[in-house]
Image (tube, rainbow, N blue to C red; front, side):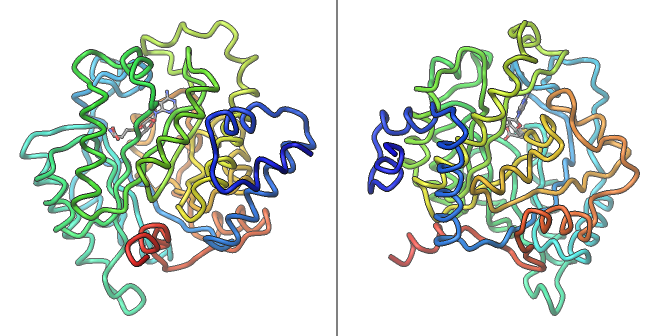
Length: 365
Ligand code: SAH
């Protein structure tokens, strides 16, 4: 098969990637999936690492045209969790055995917010220390573009991984889905600052943005490679009805299956090319299809972020329609997550940080 020639290459051109993302017949997709799985097994192992996700605030100064919690959506009731509630959730997360958590929120750059995040991280690290986790939970932050100084403060407080998606590596497409005050280059600078500060840095894109081509997605993969990122989180773009992009797709339900498949192929291709990074199978995949996250694991992802956001605010953090589990009365417990993952034949890491191997491989190579 021609696909075998490509997947076994040492380096990949834009054309190679376009080819891999374009394959559509079952046999070829199966081949791509299995190859990606093998690479994952070889470079990161088969274990799945967990990060409890706490969406601690939906207050946002940005106005991303695709996002349900954008500043201009006045139908959202804004909240910021109290420090105590976040700490309690973090303690629960540690007791369950998740090992790490992600603190995510809308974006704010004011001093009060920065201090809040800094203090919260410090307290989480302090209050989750135990014999099993001598340094407390691993903390990943996902709180948007900040200055280098702010990133340094977060790092010194004890966070050691950071997620900031580029959303698309095509600057023209980026400017179409964001207002003028949100600037592509500033995000690149932020990603570079994160790296300089010492974070394990994750980025990612949305797949199926209106106007996005296969070429754009192939360039996204080359972008990840060029930026030498440690972690990757990608997911399908899903419409939110109260955003300016709600009318883009008349045929969204028809394209849904295609976008879903493309998302899985993006995971596989990124695994084949980037090898030893951590790749998350995201909630957006699960929002599209109930077993979407498990499918992502089969295509080479090795991280899952179970939902730990306290239930009373969950419905106020909807980036897109159809977010799963907003009506649940409890958070994902370790056993439930474990069972779902083990149903795919994988084992689950307990009480582990599950850091990006790439980060250490490049540091010590
Ligand atoms: N304010 C933080 C967190 C943003 S939410 C930050 O800027 O990093 C996390 C991610 O959700 C975004 O980066 C975006 O890629 C994704 N997202 C937002 N709206 C979405 C939508 N409608 N469909 C799919 N993903 C979406």
